[in-house]
Image 1 (cartoon, rainbow, N blue to C red):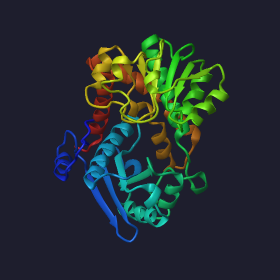
Image 2: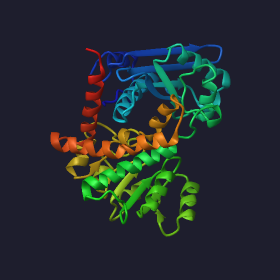
Image 3: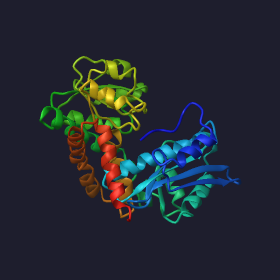
Length: 367
């Protein structure tokens, strides 16, 4: 899944990528504007081969419209792969709203955005992403029935962090099974970078399973909350640079920003497994091979962090937590299947996951 963003992205670059099938291949890209509310948005539908496109709405102050389009293209393509590997009957889509949500987000703007999504007639189903929250989806849903990630009071499931963390934990168990022959994390040292919405739930699973947990976060209050709750079971280090160098680290879980695995971090990483909740952990193509060359097992991020999208997809059928948890439990088997395919084909797990997802999408397309 090659990114198209860069330091400077021109309109010509974006259009070239959109119509180049190996990186683009999108079915539809919609530019949306509502002058009355100031709404400027991009809705990108990468694929509907498996069903209506599903993906969140990102609200972000992009430096240019071209950069916003490029981000929508990348994110929507990634959702096609994530939804395919999660076994969902959904294709990939993503929307971005241009602007600083702290200053330009209004109820009227969100309602206008809801009307734009509704105009697509169900080809795209939206949810939360960076800069948008459950309360925002409640507003969008007033104009658009193809909205998920709503509050329980409005027929939704609420925060998806619980199942996202549960899915990552299943990915870790599968990684341990593959590498050490046992799916338990008992006695393993696990480093978690980022203990916010998802990370702190992941720590709960690890502690309950008997792991030794080391954490870090840029927010001191987040670290303190976990240390106070689990004295003796959890320790903390100053930052991510220190965490990836912890002696005897078995598993590294990036749960904060993307790009955690790069040319600087991979050479010094002490862990034998990388499995975390963060999106886009590989900073650039080739990092997956660098990990493999160091015999570090990488559980593809978009596979193990799919618990959240499993939850929001289930909202469309009347949310049932137990049903969602059962689906998220299958991340264990999916992760093992990826490792087996990687070994069979002689490729890194990230490439194996892409192949499996692409095969499912190809087989779903009508002849």
